[in-house]
Image (cartoon, rainbow, N blue to C red; front, side, top):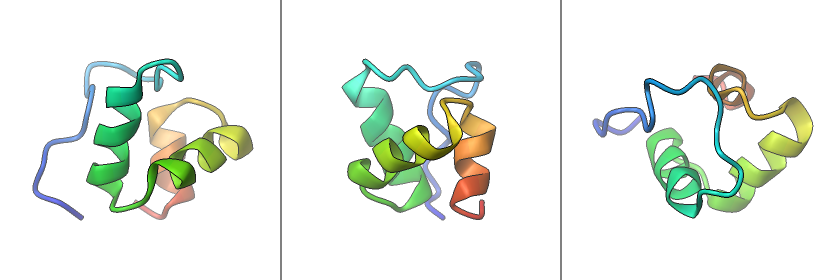
Length: 56
């Protein structure tokens, strides 16, 4: 896991239209943006659930 702080820590859900948010979350989790999009399709936009999807 990166030492970069979690993106949008005050938000509970990922804005699916915000490209920067996708990039920041992908970098934080150490995955690709495509993996983030796939996770959103599988588990939804709640950031804690997306993190859990990747085992974080």
